[in-house]
Length: 432
Image (tube, rainbow, N blue to C red):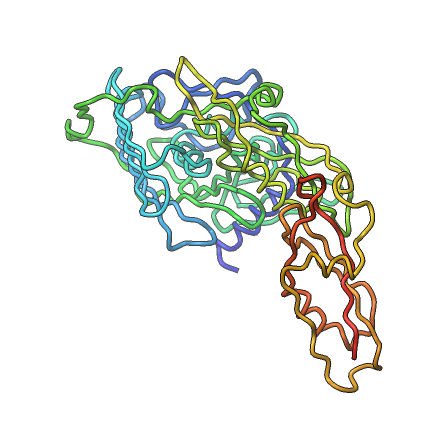
């Protein structure tokens, strides 16, 4: 297994063990470092990752490349020229993702953004490369924390997960630390020295166990004889046009929606039918949900449907000093997969009436006695999407062809008083 693959395996396990938590984040009137300001009421955890942007720190020039795990060809280039907390320039350049030019020169700010929304993954990684404080401030008791300070990781690269069965893994990057803050889950690794400070040259941002982004610091050196034109600002950007963000407690976040925060849960076929689950929601400055990250997903097959519904929600814009800001926070839900739709599965005849596309298997002669049947249980969400298919009953000789056929079926949603509802159904195939 390669070093990068090894770190991805460790990161996926870390994410599975993390729990939700959030902190309040308040943007400053003028950026004081290449990250937004934060406030927190509880002590932050400790990581080896150094802060490069404190007053009096040596000026530096940093370059980094950000890539998505599933699409390494899509690259985002980051470059930072930092002289002092009130004198710095940052560029984020990408052909397909978010791009930005941000210049801070004294009390003047210039900001040009390719989009009106700064994605969580990019915002978090770009900041954490030079200052881990925003990530640490987002941490709350109960979040998973694996650091050198708490003894869960060491310089050899060994990372141990506590629990009923203690498990340890080793990274080839040496010391690896992980802060599992909700919406800001980051691994720090590949530490190297810079002016007596240790700086992670590889950072991983976790979306969910199968999705992550990485930031590789490709160059970090002293900034000498910086060109004054780097900080030249002809026309400052008004605060209303600058992108800043704030993390709100759930109670405050739930006061902002313009519609009920109700999720129509699909009727799952197996697993828990009721319980609790939670999501991390990021809202753009106009109040539209822009990102939904799973935190504790108790019913995985219903996750896509739930996230799709949350993405349609609209909130009142959050204002800070009179300017709209991006808003983030955790939303917890009680789920009941039998609350909507018919209480019992639809019959084969009822299901066929709702099928927009149906394919019958072609059984070879003699594969099974005439009249033999194979039945599947199907779960359809409120939008008509099939979220689960489970073999129910029939001769095993009929399974493969029957499964290929049912996989091609498409269904319409079920209407109840004009409102779309989920349902379960039985679909039966019969040998002629």
